[in-house]
Length: 249
Image (cartoon, rainbow, N blue to C red; front, side):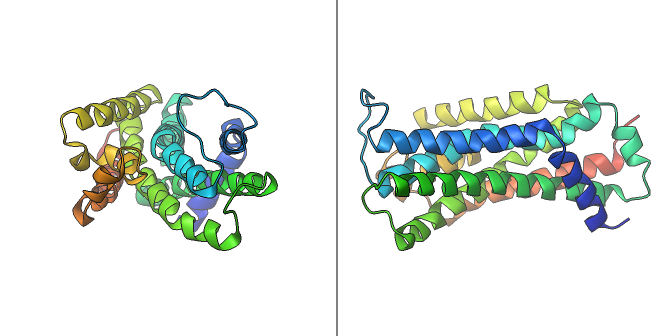
């Protein structure tokens, strides 16, 4: 059984899961709300300034992915790996004639594709709605140009969510990785107080989105931007080693 076979099997599990369709629905709701706020239809009494243009709107989507993505994507990887333990199917899965490396790689790949689909859906639905609402500065060229930063932020958040798969494996369920995700978000907030946020990987996406201001964004160098991907690599290797050598009985 090859990697492609394992990938197809894992994708079928996801497609037939209710949580997958719920996540797609949630990915449509948030950009619509932001678009209505930008258009002034709702949220007229918000304490923060709102601008009816593409720049403000895409900035909100970047912030949504940077913060909300850590929770949502973290849950995706937690579910993909943790459900095998919660449902008691892990021993049956490992008994199949397929290497554990292929099983884990397929799960990680399906999780990354799932998260990527959610991110593209958020951006696509959002841009479609603001186009229909006739916001300022909305055209195909501007939308494509603004997508690169959003896309890079998405890749960082996906990478930072991979360690949740390892925590789900050693914790044998959902609760441990979800607690881990919440803890990283809390520490990311605290790191800004002590001025070390540019060195804490889970704080980088928020800083890259410009949530902390242009001054902090300007401090991000190549080393800082590599940190999230390094965490993704460490998480991938860790979960591969765990599934390869740990006792799953």
